[in-house]
Length: 309
Image 1 (cartoon, rainbow, N blue to C red):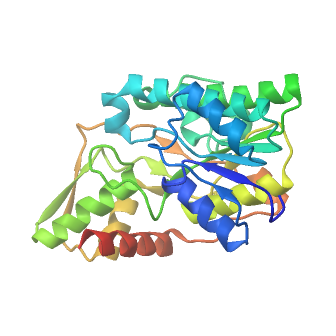
Image 2 (cartoon, rainbow, N blue to C red):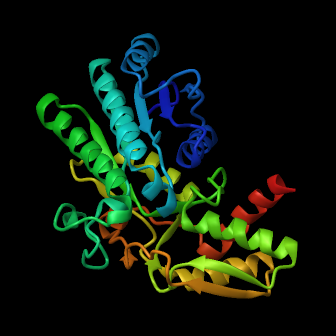
Image 3 (tube, rainbow, N blue to C red):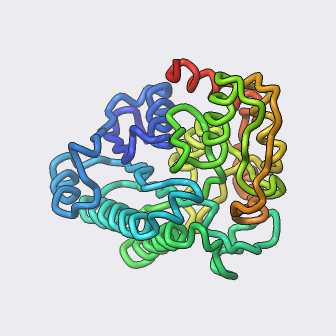
């Protein structure tokens, strides 16, 4: 990518898209093409085709997606598979037809089998059953990876894909019903502290292990790979280390200053027992995450706190 290239960041108001925009602007890319959902509905093929015909971006970061935690995936499975299939299909196909130089597609680590060997290498994909609580979303993302690879093989389209681990950071979704575990816990514990509550309920046993990557690290990796990676294989992006949900909740309680009890409700679903990515391929290319979980949670809480008061 050159500084004068036109770069379209799909989903620029979301967690990942906003981080990519911040990174590109910091690096001096000032020809960014951005559209809100009200300006461009990516679920509408006619609107997507018209946008690419008019704007002709050189590079595309496809970060737009319908995302959510266990509750949202269980409650709205049809929305997750429909919206994500429509968004990625329209954007990838239109980018190819418009002559886009290169596209990066954001997958997800949830596409790996529920019982995949840990840490999960890229070869684990499609080797076993998926976690039932997010199967529709995962299947849509798998279809996106295969579409990028198929367009590369048939048309020579320069599409690459990444599979990030669990993300968090500024502009995350903190809604208690639709958010992922880290922002959900952060908000719940913040509100418990503000209310002087004696305890906080945490879904599940607290035993599952999760890996968490600050979204600014992901954005850094995406720009790095857009400039340096041309492989067909979708690459894992993570930190290579994980914590239990109990450890995460305790860390958040310490950051927030909550001194009450954490009560784990084992009647609620745990989800996948463990999700740790093997990031050796990414390390071999010369990229590593830099933001520690402690610092990242503290910075994210400060961002959230300023907007919650």
